[in-house]
Image (cartoon, rainbow, N blue to C red; front, side, top):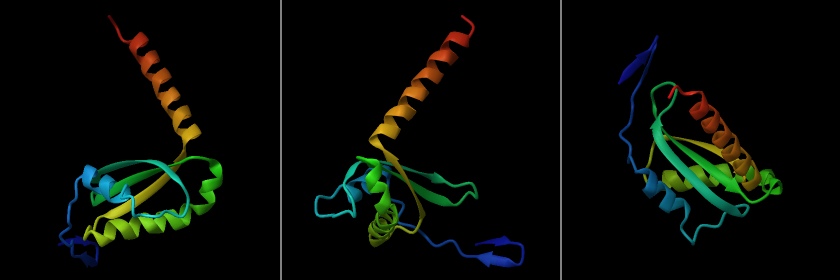
Length: 119
């Protein structure tokens, strides 16, 4: 239990699934999503308020699937909650093109940093 000013909050025990277990839940063939999902990235940790949390990045094939992001977000949260997991789930979206662009930016940044580093 912890206190935020006048409010006191009970932290409930969680299932504390590992990243790979959450990923397996999302990748189950029986799960139908509101739009085609090309891939997933899952991370666990503490959020900015130090609460246990789960981050799920949903990789969509095209920008058109973004129209279904609210439905997919709801499905992801429900699927994880059904496992008994109680941590908050943050759901973010990328397209395959967007992910490739981010990866390229990260490579360029890493290259610049390696060139700036003293020998």
